[in-house]
Amino acid sequence: AQTVTQSQPEMSVQEAETVTLSCTYDTSESNYYLFWYKQPPSRQMILVIRQEAYKQQNATENRFSVNFQKAAKSFSLKISDSQLGDTAMYFCAFMVGYGGSQGNLIFGKGTKLSVKP
Amino acid sequence: NAGVTQTPKFRVLKTGQSMTLLCAQDMNHEYMYWYRQDPGMGLRLIHYSVGEGTTAKGEVPDGYNVSRLKKQNFLLGLESAAPSQTSVYFCASSRQGAYEQYFGPGTRLTVT
Image 1: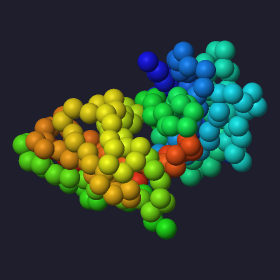
Image 2: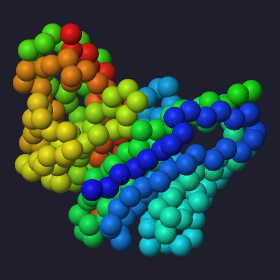
Image 3: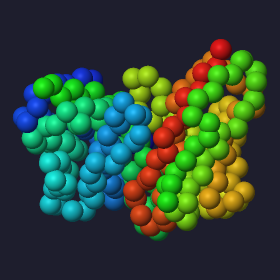
């Protein structure tokens, strides 16, 4: 069975600074995907970034980047130049890739990030 | 293009009552999912569907039933609501072969 662990229930960062959210996972699968989702107070789940396990290069999306350490089963999210709108719950999620069919998302418990002015 | 919509947004039920949550997507996605989110927890998969007329159990299926009679709709039913089913329910959809899931806005259900 796959598990996802987020060890930081809450974090805070000053506006314009950089923050890193941690995520570790456990799996025996070789083909999988990792995601970071953002959930602002509106409750909407928003995909922030995705990483395919077979890719060595770390994914980046504007101010968001990941540090994917496959051997250590670690998948951290770095937010640069933090903005007030980044205040949200952040969920790390894992999905096994089944070739042509879909795996199911397995979520961590989340990290509540507060960006302070 | 509304994406994924959920009806209703809020609902209060008494123990033992039944209800159906409706999820609709206009992206022609083959796959649809129902999750629940409890305080201090991430989302957990209840049921999912890989196509019209097909459904499968997820991690926490007990107490729920689902139906996918039309490709664009995925219904989640509670036959006899229990306080343990108080939660926020999210629907999601995805294209076959793509791994991004698109989420609806959620339904907050309270069972008293």
